[in-house]
Image 1 (cartoon, helix red, strand yellow):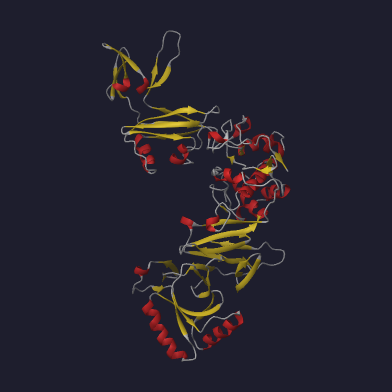
Image 2: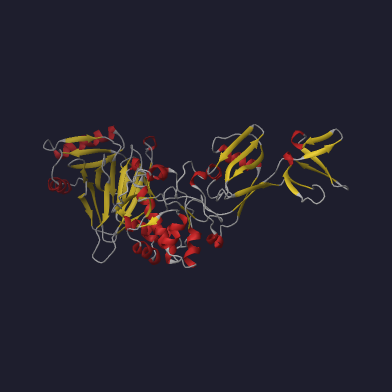
Amino acid sequence: MRWKILPAVLTVFIIFRAAVIQAEVSIPDSIRVGLKYDNTAPAAVRVSSTFGLEFGYREGESFIGLFSYPYSEQLTVRKDSFFMENKGLFIEVQADEVGNSQNSYYGPYHIQILGTFSRKEQSELLLKEMKDKGIEAYPVFDNGWRIWTGRYTSIDRMKQEMNKLGSILGDDFALYPVYPTGGRIQVNDKSGKVLFVFEGKEYFLVGRSVGQADTIPLVDVDGRNFRGDIEFKRHAGGNITVVNTLSMQEYLYGVVSREMDPDWHIEALKAQAVAARNYALVNMGKHSEYGFDVCTTTDCQVYGGYDWEKENSNMAVDLTDGRVILYEGRPIAAFFHASSGGYTENAENVWSISLPYIKGVEDKFSEGSPHNAWQREYTPDEIKAVLAEHGIDVGFVRDVRVDKYTPAGRSLSMTIQGSRGSTILEKEKSRAVFGYDELKSTMFTVKTDADLLVLGQIGQPVQKVRSTDACAVTASGVKSLADGPDLLKIYNGNDYSVVSKYPSKFIFSGKGWGHGLGMSQWGAKGMAEAGYSYVDILQYYYQGCTVE
């Protein structure tokens, strides 16, 4: 697997959380990582483990086991909804898509046999009895144990089957209809058979590897391996939120190797490990509305799970176990980015709040970065389309210019002028609009193909100016080109050339990658290779801080 640096794009959210951390530092033993949620939440998740899986739920610190599957074959955790089987594949469909084709359709209506049991053993006796009678049934946990059968696609179909089943079982077996809910989850085997059903409500369904001595218990989730537990829950009746709960140390194993090249100098990796630990500490509960702490993307910090772990990066995490960056005794929001472009930045010049430990410093150590120089080119139509995606309409784009820079050379304010008006993109908003991978940083200049070279007075250098900023000497006096026609007739003393005063392309030339706050990862590499320790690196990029 080829390693790739990803830019660290951290949200302003953590600035506010930094203010409420108390002086006494306590690093949580575990962390909850959202693997899939919101728009990425799936209808079904494939899971497996070498020595089998155990499912249950957590009551406080206790794990309550419900169902075990002691085999390595893949299982599917699926929302209890409508789906069809086509050539062995199970695909979710809407209720109105259920038809009478050759496909097999399944739905969220079931039949309950007898009542609710307080003990699992009681339900198992009934399950065995149903099997002996040739009735395919399965166990269900919903604040007690139940036995259900069927996955019917409509109320009518469910009632028809209840009548048939009643004639088979007789009056001794009471039957109850089961209607859809927004939290129910099925566990299916590879053939699609229901093994177990869990009514989620306020609980996550927890799956964990049975494990063996002297092995790392791993759970494969859709082809990727993770340490710790994998948890499942439907939010607001939607798809399945998937959460990985594991120790803080194991989480950092999967972060450091994604945020920094694991082949880099160990001191740089140690600096990254401590910065990542700070980020996790300050951001506990960032995504609490979905039931987890942090996500796996650059919205938080990139996490790849067990498959991304490397010996060097794991060593860096272990060698810095328990170490955090403090400012006046409190953990800091340890922002970091890929490459500074030569200078890091003050927090207030990127977001809206000043932080005493996030101040710009000269960063000559980043000079070896491949992101020291980059360029992006746009036509007016392309910029118009980019703005339209964000609900901004300035008409035909006539000019793009940076009005104000920070002392370090980053854009504080960029104006896009169009035929219908203008819009101003301040600080990081330019990257948010154009894309964080398109404009790698705000340390850029903008040139156009309509810029003019103007010869000044004798002894003065030639200057490049926008055509709309230039003036021309005419028979009636000096006139601004901005007030003239769209097409300009230029004479060089011998020939004429007709050009548009409005650009046909805008060229962004920039340096660095990321917001420029805190530690530059390429700068950390340069410092480590120059002989600096990870503490030196962290104290250089985070002004006035200590590492304890």
